[in-house]
Picture 1 (tube, rainbow, N blue to C red):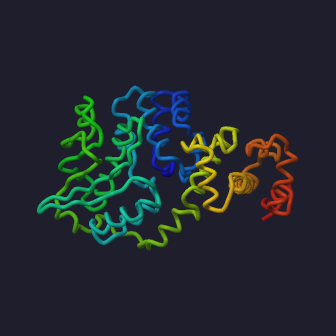
Picture 2: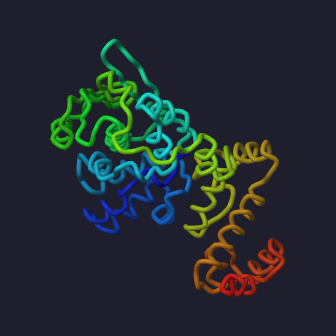
Picture 3: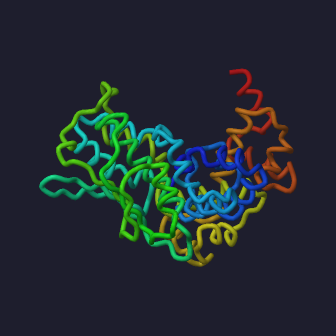
Length: 331
């Protein structure tokens, strides 16, 4: 899993260069709803993120789409994770923090630091996602790594060499025109090489108030983990497409329905219970933050009859949706 924030400006960039329909097709190919554009904190499957970048490359016809999108990001999209890293007293400690906090932002990939007498290599290893074109996603990762290192090494700093985790496909000249460094392809992971002495550098800007690891955990985990977090994200996306059911949620997560049921049983819950929690949370938000009618909210939450939604909401909260909305407006 990862968060929608990781796609950065991909939606606005793709819509600008290829039109709204191209963006819609890219989202559909990645099995993602439009909700990911509105909520950067939404957790989505990592393979959907990779497929979205691949689709953006195809829809735009730009061989450097991923790199262009990455160059338009400054790392601020990553929120507490980046804040935790750049508040460290040295680059070395900052890299350690980024590696430690990685599972709170993404599950699957991992960072690592290797050192020689003169050189340091910071690497990002993705899990093997069979059948997916990872090139544009990998390209967009490089500028984010460089942006973090620049917080310690200077605004104009560039690495000595960079490595990509896919074979040379003939785009090297195009990519190096945008990012003029020495490119190496066909490596096991994405990496950036720089002078080892830089590991002891303090941040360029005065550090912000330092976050503790527990503050980062609290800000990023949102109280959910494992199969439950994955299913809640899948259900939220399914609601955006006006379809629910364990079969479709399992399809989105690339699991069999029985496998998903077993995972939920190990957590002591069921699909129906998780669906109810997601619906309640969304209903409260829509009643508090929008002027949508009860019928419109019921439809958005997958209810065929508004009365069924009203009864469910009363069971959750003890008050009717209309009464809850009045309480929100009053206070």
